[in-house]
Image (spheres, rainbow, N blue to C red):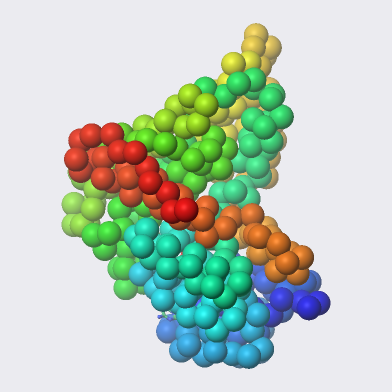
Length: 330
Ligand SMILES: NC(=O)c1ccc[n+]([C@@H]2O[C@H](COP(=O)([O-])OP(=O)(O)OC[C@H]3O[C@@H](n4cnc5c(N)ncnc54)[C@H](O)[C@@H]3O)[C@@H](O)[C@H]2O)c1
């Protein structure tokens, strides 16, 4: 195979994937799909797919498509992903992978059964500041890690989405958006073992879930960590994240042009970084290369499911008032 031939389902977030495919010389945009025909025409004018369709099954059934982007509302992720895998396509599915662990497990099982690749779009793993922070932690720049924190601070009042599908009692803030911060810490500190969380519901009062959560986790090697998630805060979007080690500390986020490195008693160092907070093009390069090189993509179905498991355990803890051991799919 010289090029990966893609179909994209869902074109609001999926517009970024479509652009990533259009710009990638190893990828070809075969077809795009959205039930909103006006939006679909706009995306088609920009990126020139061979075909457009309002029926997602046309994408999963197409013999000339190798890989499918599932960028529809979360409630569709499992059905579309499993159908595409069963029809012999590789799949990259948006985050959160699904709204329940059972759905995630069905998606992983379908990938194993069919031998087709499944990647989950945890896009923070491609934000330059977070890539650099991970490299520094792994190379020992800040010594031995002991505390990690990340926040997802967003105001969803302006981003209900089409059809208000975010107002689902299963889509807690810590799962829908907080999964970015939870995934970032999983990626850098490892899978958390236990979580304790508090949540409240003081801002988006007409939404069916809590809007603010603080989750405190135990990570491997005695590292402790915290995720703060608010989907209704009155400030600009940020994922400010801090990594504390025995020799130094890194402060970074995905919306600022520099990160700060503190090493022992030296002057703090400001390191310039690209912002690229939603670096979906890099994600599409990874998916395309994984298919062409016939290897696992960087963020597998298991990785997506681990993050969902950690987020749902935080919800359970916030509801029960006790710490919850996190159970991961095997
Ligand atoms: N990685 C990120 O940072 C990020 C950011 C935003 C959204 N997302 C994720 O992307 C997904 C979509 O979110 P969004 O913000 O684009 O939502 P949205 O509501 O803004 O748009 C959803 C789009 O999907 C289309 N659609 C819905 N059902 C469809 C169907 N059955 N067939 C074809 N098209 C259908 C809608 O017409 C709409 O254009 C969600 O899973 C969300 O969590 C990820």
